[in-house]
Length: 145
Image (cartoon, rainbow, N blue to C red):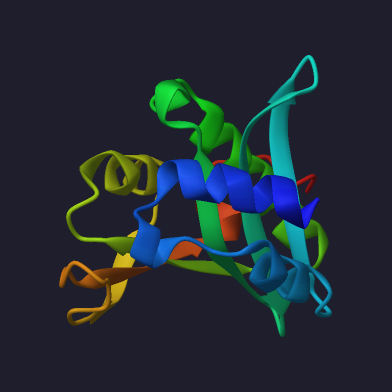
């Protein structure tokens, strides 16, 4: 599975930000870490990696095939991650996004994520990372309550 996820990640990220199959495999082997794949008819569309610990969840990375961006795949992946995190006891979700990634920021804002911090010059291209926080119970995603 890690090889497939690394291939998908490479499609969506610049070389300096791509994750290797080894790195993804190591993450998936850690307690509380998980990966979710979106697919149709056996064809992978994208994936998200997350983790849950001590009532908090984090989006580690999300990748959607470039041709499928803005088609609802990212939203479906995030919804599935929120549901998985809620089932594992998380109440808050954190994630980082480049300040220059307008489409992703719109998606996160639509779910109710708000800026909780900033990491200056975090990405290889020198852009800042916005640290976003999402209250799982009030984000509008069904959490089986």
